[in-house]
Image (tube, rainbow, N blue to C red; front, top):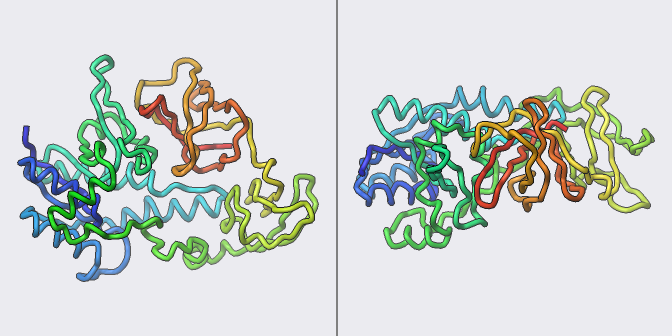
Length: 349
């Protein structure tokens, strides 16, 4: 059945192809580009690109200014987390609060029935449970289900991911066939509000008081050198530390914002037997209920690892089958059963 659908369009080939596929299927499509940050500019390349594609497809295009919300909900969160010694995940939060928060409200305003994006993920209705299941994309190299785990049942039920069953190369080929102007556009690997990928420079310019000299120490408290502020280092980092050691490479093992100390150690010291995960959102079921085996992705680009999930009040204790090095408080841990997202949450410790 054809519907009225709004499509979040960033100006890239993925969201453009999502709009094209829906329009070619007979749906009434409205392309919506959100102005997330920056100054008022008619020449904004993302907006210009999306507008050009909408013109080519013969669909309506709207620009939604959400800069104030984006600053309050995403940028300030990003800065607060880093200055608190945590490693944020702004894309996860943006999906929950902006793309599937504000845009769903806009969908109601224009009386649309569905919200579509160019994410590589799938949503299926589970006939047995009556719940919407969030699934990995067919192209696992491009799968973005990790970023979507915080979506609730209502959000999933109103969402459409036209690219979930396609590979990236198939998307590009279809875009070429339609002569989309952004068919060959290079993908950005950066945080959208830090286009030069210099997050340290961004933090320093936005929060100058984050520059606060402190100590590099080892696990026994021995002083190894000095650092410029806990906000500028992440767990697992080995480059840019500036501390030499006859024992070999040193890694950031942990950060203590209160003491303004950063503990360094060898690679083996990064490994943890497990972690505690809070702010959990369950997708496949109402709750965990009982301990179960699952695959856990600790970062978007990391390979999933096997672990036992154990209920701990509203939190989850994750016990790895073998010690893992990718545990970074503030990051998301997402739980999978094969291609199905069970749920996920924020690593506490």
